[in-house]
Image (tube, rainbow, N blue to C red; front, top):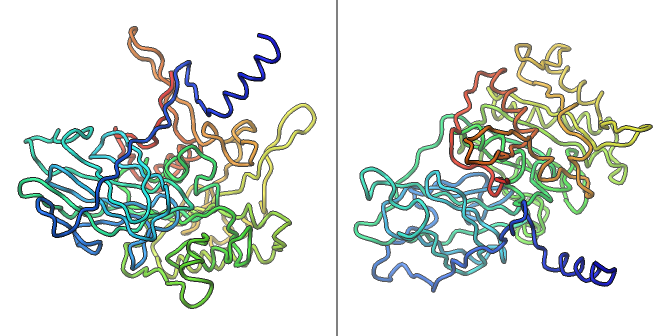
Length: 432
């Protein structure tokens, strides 16, 4: 291939954004699910308002049924032939949603404001595979984009005796508080490609919320466009996005999260401080230390029984001589914070108090971090090869590195059983 041909090939490859996985083109096309507007009075449809008791909202949503933070969702059971959802004016244009029936693989579609989308028909993967037929099925939808959100206006069902059924909460509850590393920034499917998602959805039978947003600091300070840090924002419903600022401003109109109205987290995971550690944000070690103490006290005051896991910062990698070495941020400060709650112990194995230290040293390698200083998709994941039959190839199953280690830590420390025993957690992770 001559130079001109090579340059033209390279140009075409970049502009077309084709992704090859072992020689096969990976499709980026999402089906168009938009349909004509459905009105509550339309014959053949039964419509449920967003405050219907049959609807179960996952993560943080406000009183206008607008979603916030990373990977919020909507879930319910249904007995119907079709499901459509109407989205309100505060839905982000082009927001990417993942949805599925029961334990089927995730499907993806883009939605926009003031639109109605048809998610389920008898042709949808997994429809009516229950026994007996026409049994009650489960629908789940998740917002994948950390910066975007949806507003639920109405849920519609059709078919003979079509109805929605409330789905009870799982018995275990978790919360993860963080920044871009936990929100899934630069991961392929963002929120549902993050280690946070892999951990909490991957544990199985867990209610959870990912209150993480890129650029946010722990200390209540302006960091990378965020007006507040987590010591302030974690107590609120919305995140620190531009759409939240447009809607609520920066003052008393920012609504508080009603902790009493929601189940307390059995386990709270905190992974934050990378932005505080950047000199551009002018946050001192003392401010970071005191803010960490403050956040843990805020959590403990609202959820006295919650076990809190503090994750050490990995802060990238640098070359030292002819090898690579992992960096660390606020190492002594974070350890000091943990010790202050546990009579001087880091409590890495449990038993000394309600705050536990999780050391990330040795979990990631330098090539797990991308050019934009965040984990790559592979960096988010751990590789597990399984031996299959002679007619099959070795399948490379990818699971989040940090999530996998945290799963085992939680299992060994708190006795939690791994209950996600089959359905897909991360989407598009099968390579061969």
